[in-house]
Image (cartoon, rainbow over all chains, first blue to last red; front, side):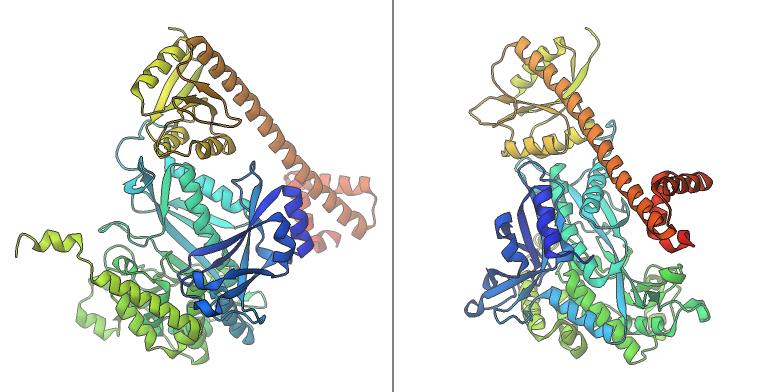
Length: 442
Length: 188
């Protein structure tokens, strides 16, 4: 931490890096970059690289298109797969207006604003995401298929498992880039994998996640595979989630842990859970931003549907893992890996903080399987459900001044516009299911 | 039939080429352990079977053979021999124009395999040296910290690390890392 301009210039020279990707994300969380040569690096490190913001979805209109990239020196990392043709490195950047003020549509800057808000109470939020993804085969035309690498007997006699080997390379590459990986394993569905990050502060983790998706796709391609973070690529099979472990620290101490409280959970932790539950409907559009996200949030596939919390049971939205001490945390189970991590962490933090500020006591934990409850039982426990589709989620977002404030007015407006456009496009399609169901019957 | 010395995977959609290569190379002690009819499939086959040699038809779809070549080289997957059934420029990669004499093919294939083995050994050696260098740096750093804070000379700092590591039954480098991470604990 605390890299200087000189450190980076020296590092680039020593390691033979020739190209540097100045990276940032659009509102949908897609990684964008302006690639510069080594000769331009000095200028770039001074924040003088300009780009046309009107070409980025959700940024600005054409008449206000000049934007500047200010790199965060600590995010400098060299990509491990370009050793010969001159190496490549990346720097994560904040987007600035020509007048030197942070651009209000920059997701990274918006997360920083929420982090600053938490700092006023001396809180730092740590996040540990568990990102799941599928790896599918690429066909002879280079197009992705839905065929998974570990289906059927094709590879039975092979000495190594293709997915394992790709995942090992992914972990090694991520570690070479300075990301700390806690675990990696095969997931429930065929071809599905999970790589878990060691928890870190929200900004650092969001940077890591942005790079992560890019690295995973690149390495998969080098293995003849296609990696996707689409939340539900195949119906009736578990989708890909991004369970996110959250904790609040003050002066290096996890304030969620109170050895003298019931279950060793501090009052702040309970209020934080209260906030996460109370605002769940409103932030779901952000943590689950695709039409497809809502195909994952259905009963039966370990994804949450109901707004409740529990200690052991994995069906509710929030789970409290058994670990105590410095590892005391809440696990928010609804987000999926298609979200913009900067915005997702910003709304999670805002919702949790509101719980603390307004002393929102959560309802009692539900340690029963909610999917087995009748509607009456759910009503007795006061259990509401998450939005069932993207449109409902956007309406819930519209109704929440708090989550809109967490996004900032500019991002909220553009984000909403993009999500509604996607919903309307989806709504006018005729799906295969409809054709199969109705064509011959009516 | 003699004992196979090397195995290879072939990337081609051309059955004639595959058959001819198999016939030529089998005589020279090569065994075909896999094939791919397009680049993604061929990459999967290579990663799974980890052969000595990859033999690649430059007409392998969907194209971009040079990218395939650099992936094979950068990731150290195998030796690579490109067979040109059309007109391709492969820069510095080994390219033979088809048809090729059996003896030439097997001689080139064997040379590439030996070269690959040498490269692999060198790479491992470099990796080992790099690791040693990093370890040495950390040991030096720990030694420096001990010298300065305990006011002892280099020899005694080294002995201190050595004794402590033996007491704790850990390696010198692990001991050095402990000193760097918790200096106060050791100076006391």
